[in-house]
Amino acid sequence: SITVSEAGGLTFLDIENDLASAKISLFGGHVLSYIPKSDNQERLWLSPHAYLNGERPIRGGIPVCWPWFSDDHGKEKGELPSHGFLRTQTWKIVSTEETGEATHIVLAPSFTRAEGFEYDCEVTLSVTVGASLTVTLATKNTGVVPFEYNCALHTYFQVDHIQKTALTGIAGQYKDKTQNWAVKETPSPYTFHQETDRIHLAAIAETYIEVEGNDFTQVSSQGNDSLVVWNPWQGAASISDMDAFGYKHMVCVESAITGGKTLAPQAEHTLIQRVSPK
Ligand code: TA6
Image (cartoon, rainbow, N blue to C red; front, side, top):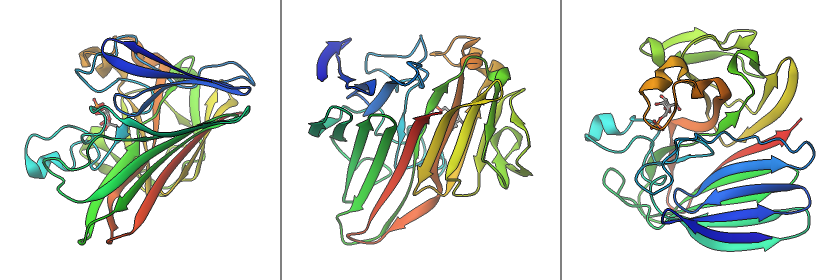
């Protein structure tokens, strides 16, 4: 079933089927919750202080970053919103389809052209809720000139405790935002002891989030050129919509294009993230 509700001026979709439940906010085209029935454990983290009134992007769940990542565009163009302008607009429902085992919802933002990105294109976000959660961000160039963009599915995963959490499946080099983008080798084991803000420079396809040595969640990525890993650590205290200890229960593992993707006229690109319980 898909139940529509309104709160704080925002519209939410509650999804329930034989294999999972989920919640989506139309503000941001934002998945807020995913609970597979195989273990009934919430996979997404949503800040208890998240703005759920349309005033700011939602802290937690799966923010959609597009057509730039972080402030990579803003630096050139002046004061433009971090992570683009899709996460602060109200999306519309394009279609829904339900079977007992899966619910498919396709959403589209209300506009794709704004200051800093003046191109003709179509964007959709397809969400499939079932044994896995699959989120597909599709961008099509409907204009007559090529354009370049970045994007990310900036997923906040819920973990019992960040100091009992490890990632596997990530190798190669990363750029460290906390050290002026110094290029470093991925650590092994991949554990968390301090602020972590990394762009792993490879199209990493399979990552596992381990909690206390056991695989808890598999994160599969397609159409990405990089994988971003973020935990603000004590810096959370200076983030208005997180509490000082909020960092203990989350880790962002983000399927992303950060190196610039050029789309020729009529070309389409999809960025996919699949979240599966293990
Ligand atoms: O994905 C990592 C990152 O870009 C960090 O550098 C950090 O700023 C975070 O995202 C959150 O960004 P936000 O605009 O949501 O506060």
